[in-house]
Image (cartoon, rainbow, N blue to C red):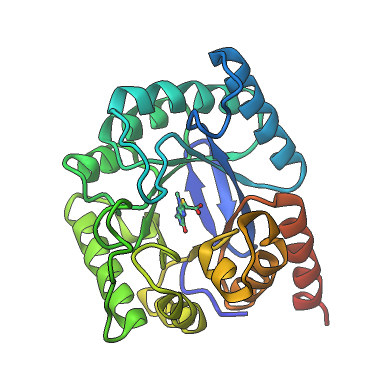
Length: 283
Ligand code: 8Y7
């Protein structure tokens, strides 16, 4: 275990995350292509039941995303994104005891989600969109800053790094400075290496191996590798056969000190977290 340089208590809106523990963040997609069985109520109800199942399985955060970040995904308008995300934030806040993370880069979604009970802003673009820094600052919520280059549509076009870990660290440091400039205190920031975003397999593996060096920035880490292509490429497995690879990386990320594991398979990941914690807290 790494000794932590930050307070264990992270206020997330009306809830608190204990950063002395490892947390499982369950992924909830509310893009129409992920629940395409027609009818807005049915889609929202299915998403709510999915969130409920993930909380019952051990998720302490739910990450709601209304804009697909998959390469080649269609751009959605701010209004469309808001119409997908806002009802889910409201419903989960009303029905479940969990920190609601909103996966968004859109200022209007940041503001409205915070008003409806979100506890964390998760932006794969690190608040680089016009107005996003100010919107996030105004919410008072913690922010997850993730490393990426370019946009999801073009990010895999031949990314190059001389030293991927050092360049990721330096980008995250710059984004922390941009946050500080608008009044987002370092104490509100979570950092994420951004696995699979503008990185080749070799970059992803090297960054994973050296992820501890990001602790020099003094903030907790969130790691998202669940079912990603770095697993598919290494093991030669299609997406539905990446569970064991995902669990191996979750276990490794945890022993490297990651605070939040962003995953699809909550029950399985929660088991490995509990098992590792049992060993780590033994005499
Ligand atoms: C990540 C993420 C995605 C990640 C954070 C996928 C929204 C791609 N990946 N957010 N989002 N970190 N913070 O395969 O790695 O889940 S979307």
